[in-house]
Length: 296
Image (cartoon, rainbow, N blue to C red):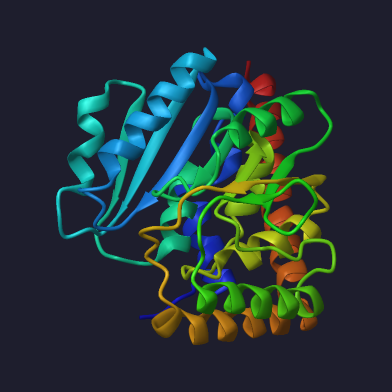
């Protein structure tokens, strides 16, 4: 399966159907305080308890919220699970399985919230991370929050398999030297963004695979979006769909691909094209407005 979309093609696709210039900013829309995106693939059995846990936590918090499940081409009843949880829950369905990165991207671009977060379907981290992230972003201190398992205050309440722990150490070490010395844990399945930052980042993302987080970190740095890492506590890893045997090598390949794209300036070039395209739209809008005034 092709795990990425060429940047120029991706930009064209996004421009056609979801250009931020054609979408009102979050503050102008009838939006929730926070929107949570949950990517899911064949999660019919596990998803009800996940959504119930989210519902209980968010209702107790008292925040205005919306939850989007992104069904990544599941072959079971995943797409209908959210129907039982009321109007605050909805599902975006991809017609075929494309990968976690594609599912998260679709949900984040669809999300309507002042703050937008994504987390894995097994809710691997304490949900207090949501509230902490929301409050930090709303305070104006930053525009992006990245969950981290390798900083002071992070915890682990599960017995991780030795193979997975070893793989995490290797992956973080490579990330430190190839991707970012600041963000050494790129793969924690929890990240949170201010709405405008979310649109800017995910409109330029290209990776569909499990390694999409690496590209998100690179885009945050390329766009110079203020970010903060917060410690997260791992409480569940029972049913992760990430397989070391099937996904480890492709993830490493994607890491080197992203590094190569950085070296050859692809992300900076795509950003410039995107900015130029929006500038042309602004000029066209001003010209149309001037013409309308003159005709009047």
